[in-house]
Length: 453
Image (cartoon, rainbow, N blue to C red; front, side, top):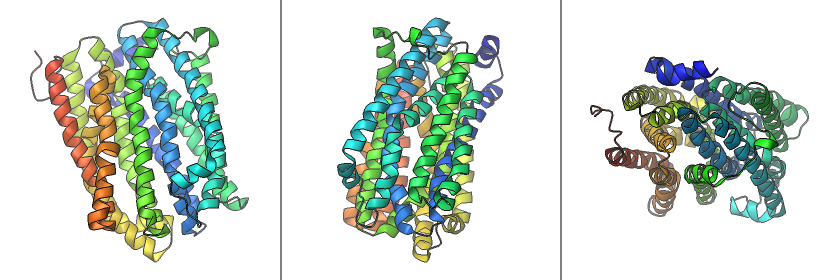
């Protein structure tokens, strides 16, 4: 396996190397999209806008799970990729084990605190008298499964970091397929409603974690979850947290922005919240594919940076931007052409379909810019550049989106809420390019349009 990984990182033609690493990750992200669509879709078959709105209200909690996972998954994965480039294989096992056990501890703490303070949490995320009980029945189950949801995310990032994109994808697919199978059984057949969606999600993540543990124990030459490899050191901590914490800020702020959006939209009624939730699921398809592309090549970037192979590194960046921008543009056009049909597939409600179609058409306008934003963020993470990584992580869904949605709502009303996301995406992409150019000039790695010195 080591020889195969070295070939991908060092000698394989760049488009083929990108395909080897990114395609399984993109497929895995596609599976994640289906995974996220499943709950909303099957709950929508109950034709109850309040339950669809309740699923939307839980988005901040899901994103906070991902934020915790990012600390150990992205932080640990970035360090493991660089360790592979330096041929320090034993340290990879130690880093993996530390990330695994710290993620479990974080998940347990989150679960305990979340269940104790469930009622204040419901108020915080914007649940009202119509959605309170539905949201509560989902969250109690989902929060109890926090350790498995968080660890599943961590494993996906770390296994991709060693270049094993296929096993990472398989673990995600196992969970998604199981979730899709369980959703209609629990939600509709057993008449559990939204609580059935929560049970399906937690069970699916448990099975994914079991697969990943087996992979680390039986197949991976570089990763470990054995207690004997759990050795916390200053070096590991200072390489995981400076990258992991900025990456986690993206999830934290995504959750915070969803929380702000839900609370602002709540004044316009549950149909608006339901429509926003449906649109967020629909636009997740191209966004997650592009994230998969950029996350998938992160090990390739980190490895060649550590190995001082800047020419190959620049070629990877150029190829990724070209493909990602074309994909984003085509995806935006397809979503606009099919927007009313997409919304109606989730909920057969005339008001929700009309509003959702308008929101979807507007939100697709920024999709062609997303590859640049996601790629720059992953470049900084792969290179271990904590400050620019942090800036980008907190820009799109935090420093830019939250002020935009609040100010726009005050001056324009509902239309301001609708336009907030595309405006934030485009502004964040511009910031990403500026940071990339500035950072590259200071770190030998230069912009893709220049010649390597």
